[in-house]
Length: 238
Image (cartoon, rainbow, N blue to C red; front, side):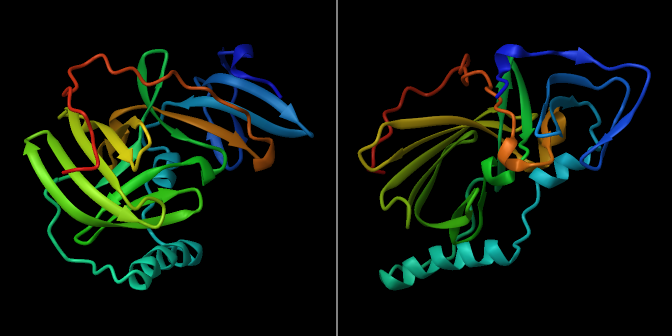
């Protein structure tokens, strides 16, 4: 399988064509192209800020599989006598989408298979991880506003009984934040997220293929945090 080491970075000029239902314009910049089993595969920058790929990664509606996944996580609370209390979220931005870095710049990413897409949402009773297997609810045990750009949550759910998450907003205009979390005895995990309302403020990279099992591998830059991050040790205490 072709890897990112064989980046083509081609600018296709003079024509347009359709790929998986999306019209590719003549100024499209391809990062990688390949053909596997006779099907079209490509990774490219979509420079159209009205691209429907933004809408696809910013869809928060439940289908029947999402409903089943969410119910399964809610049933865990019932089985363990955990009562969900309703509280207004302290953080003003409640839908977040994973943000990637490529050659030092920020992008949102539409994978060929949304199984590899990640986002979170916060409502008045649960913190929801939207994973490839569907949305998973976490009970918000406690939440705290540390400052105007820092928030902290203590969570519990079927995938992690003890989880502490800190959200630090590092760009108030684009509403980009660093999420730092600790689950149980595991080490810290840190990743970038962007408020769903602001995703069109950054360009999108699209991984397009017809057969999902043949999706081209794409390796983004490791997230760099070249900005002040509060030097706080995240523990399971609040």
